[in-house]
Image (spheres, rainbow, N blue to C red):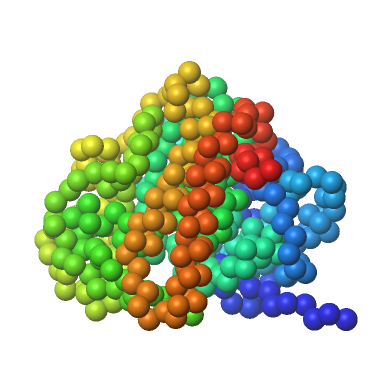
Length: 394
């Protein structure tokens, strides 16, 4: 009898204690957007090795029609192993996020005080979907996760851009979760909740330089651990557009938050002991910068500021299925390029450098290929935009 492979908690990454299961897409969100047991697309089937771990509802998931190239099952089946303690802890996050999302969807409003919690939740969903897909795909891309949800939630600079499109039917779409770029670096995805498209990005010091915070220009990579050793540079303490390379018209709002937690900044704490950093932080002690808003002109949000979202319709060119998918692909490529351009690989062997270069070039080139074919897919007829990427892969 073959020995079962080790099961890891999707939250902490350790062996689950008093194991139960976590719904990556929570039940409250499923109910808000339709039938919680509806069938959805979760990318293309990928056959590589024996299914890595015994997850919940594996029989249902594995009983798909063999001739169907798409991975389809109910949203309620998309759940994975977790420690009871971790699940209880993150259950608090779900309970606190639920009224925020409900108010966004039903009342078209979002208050500043709720944005950090929403960003934490998006970190949880983004990384959770990545880990879940690695398990379902039998690690077809040979990715070895070095972290779980807990290690990445609130750990890096974060972006949230929201586009509201009038007339979209109720439902959920997970956009960009089936690309090679996302498998190698789960930094960018889009979550559609009914009429709202939430474009979420997170990467180490992604926004810090443009927001006037300390930043880095070079990082020494440890190939075995994927750890990078950085030396931070004093911030300019001036604001400019954080995302100058990304064409993203039609966003109802663009929000940014720099992160400088103690684990990230290491021995460079003195660079953050300035009035500019202190005055532009929500939680200075725990390394949470303020919430900034804007596109060409950037400013910190006012304390009680409330966002009301502009509504667009599908007559606008940026509301087409091609543009929606292309946006995510472009941002994935941009974040990867930003990170890779700063890597110092002097400590890597020749073979290790070649592997890194090959992975980077593959991710960028495949995203370009997908982007060019994105207009072949009908967004309004797909159950889930994960299918969009799946169709492109044909």
